[in-house]
Amino acid sequence: MSEITSLVRKNILSLKPYSCARDEFKGEAEAYLDANENPLNYPYNRYPDPLQWSVKERIAAIKGVHPGQVFLGNGSDEAIDLVFRVFCEPRQDNVVAIDPTYGMYQVSADINDVEYRKVRLNADYSLDAQRVLDATDVHTKVIFLCSPNNPTANLLNRKEMLKIVEGFTGITVIDEAYIDFSSEPSWLKMLDRYPRLIVLQTFSKAWGLAGVRLGMAFASEEIIGLYNKVKYPYNINVLTQRLVLDELEQVDRKAEWVNMLLKERFRLIELLKQLDMVEEVYPTDANFLLVKVPDANAVYRYLVDKSIIVRNRNTVALCEGCLRITVGVESENELLLKALGEYRA
Ligand SMILES: *Cc1c(COP(=O)(O)O)cnc(C)c1O
Image (cartoon, rainbow, N blue to C red):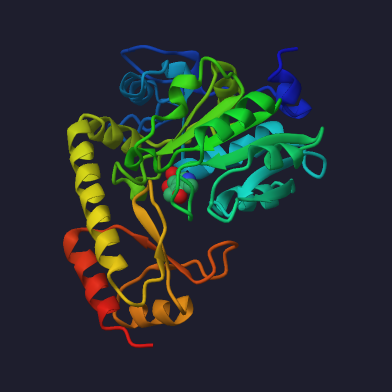
């Protein structure tokens, strides 16, 4: 048994996956009479490629990985849920995650009836790898790290992360939803060295495609094979596959967007810091800022009244008094700055 196989739920190991028509025949044919589709209304009449090879080949070329190391899901959320469904035996296994972090890990854990163990970040939002490892036991299948982290906005320290990637015998998930906005390299180039590593990225942030719902998981071919076994057969529809193939040709436009947002981020930080009401703007490696104010609930409501919506993180551990503010275009950021400048407690 490989070290990955020994981590997989027994029912998933023995699962005979659904076999669809498009799994059996690949290539071009004169007549497709195999899937009970309507022959009219091309291309929407045809089932999509269940493994999305055209899209994956393009992504793999851009990211410097093999197409077989790529999984595409209905947002990162699908890739997160599949970690539980593949590896975690309900009511028996557990996962460990940093806290605070992205809310979907816990929601997926709860839905799958898997214990979710939180390990507080340090007060400065840095990672203490040893405390994360100390929270694991023989039933811990997965550790979730998010870097840059949401909502704290910072990159986690690479050496600390490495202690987990190397020291933990289960699956380490590193969520890189915001990696395009950070100055550090992705963990993607470490995939070949660490077969139990899963790296998550998404089209929802830098690529400007949150409405399309496409998330990526990168891992060893063995892990991706398990994902493919468990996912819905046609999880990515024809429209999404076509659109994303087009969007992937616009790597330069994405880079321009990121540059513009980084400039705006810098400007926003400087101008926010000049406001009396702003107690702290935390360091950011993402496309958002975590900002501490004297009364986050009041400022949040004040901004809503001015038709400006930010995220109130007041009730989140280590984020008391904080608003999470996404970097917008210049005119939006100006509206925010103007409103905050006029705020009176
Ligand atoms: C926004 C975000 C995602 C993206 O989720 P999608 O389902 O791909 O839209 C993933 N992880 C984190 C930490 C995020 O903040």
